[in-house]
Length: 499
Image (cartoon, rainbow, N blue to C red; front, side, top):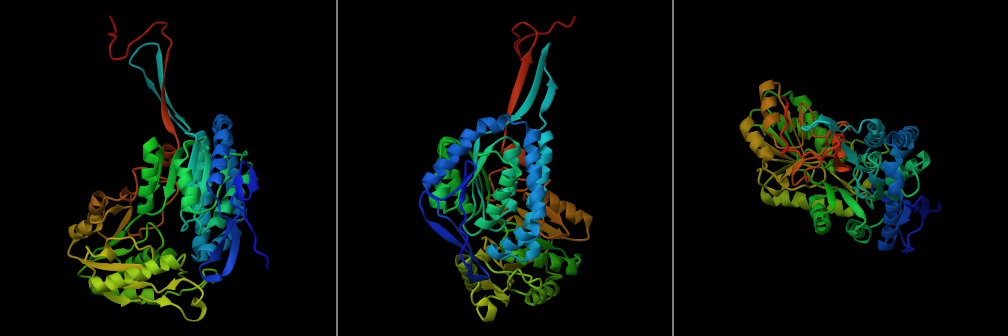
């Protein structure tokens, strides 16, 4: 069977890279399977894409926002019709189970519909002036050409979090997807093309970080860089953009915790911890890689959690019986295996898993057992550093305050949760946990598109994605004063005579 070759999308045309080179997109569940070939782009491709976005900006920003919204609505309708097809292709290229990839596509659908609604709701303020015969208001304005750089774990959802608010605000974009998941990104951009996005408004360039990402960040015509990925790479993005004071939106790592109190519904807590720790093979920035359990229920919870982890069916995500797929690639799998060895050396107790799966159907994939460490000290590396794999650390605690201290004791601040039947404990935790997202009696994953998404500390740089908060990332405020008094009036200086 001949391999399909996918092209870049620049200025409304599907074109080959100036490099003349391509790279393969392979199935992590069976690396013998080539999904397709994509352009190994270079700085010349980036330059052309940014130029196209820059040239398209003036017309697009003046295109009425409600009309921009109609195009986004059409994108959503296309995604609805092709949801199953796109979900299956996503499972093939990145490995997570089909019910999760359906959710990934659904999130792109939800975001497209939601931001289409914002085409008529980009509200500013009108407010009384302190001077007579003067009108005051604030309005949003777009920023220009934006660079979108996205990860592989949510290859359609996360791009939609950036693309849809950028477009509805009147920006143009150059989109660089992760090299592990270009097909899902292609499917999103193809849907935009089919919906009638004007040429140059959306541009799509595939390739590596140094060849595409670096030049894209440093291009002087790019006004904003929106990046989701590791904290280490996020720092390089920030440093690259700082000299030009370029706007950056950074969504980075997490080391999220579930706190299980002595009064928790343990079966519910186990279910949430399994989903949080092993959903998407632990490859989520919101994954629950720490479970902090009250000593009174620690042993019972650990036994139930391990039994459930051992029962998980591992394999190809297209199999409806499979509950956990592979790591995305060999490097990520090696990272997981390295952290398992680190945990052992640190003195954590390995009570389940810990091994790569290499027999039978697993031999050609990147599979690892769901792994559980017990009696983990909060300062151990496996309790401090993001692993991005199916490894969960169980940490005993004495009481609620101890749990809160442990939960907050990492450099990240994305998501956390508490399982308790005590409303007072729930509200104390809601108040004192310093994360951007918090759940009560639920796992650490499951964000909804109409609410802000993002974190504190080294998880981000203060911005939020999704909800109306995303509009603040992709627009700037302009305050407007209209003086119809016919004379020069001076705010804070003129005295008004009201006698």
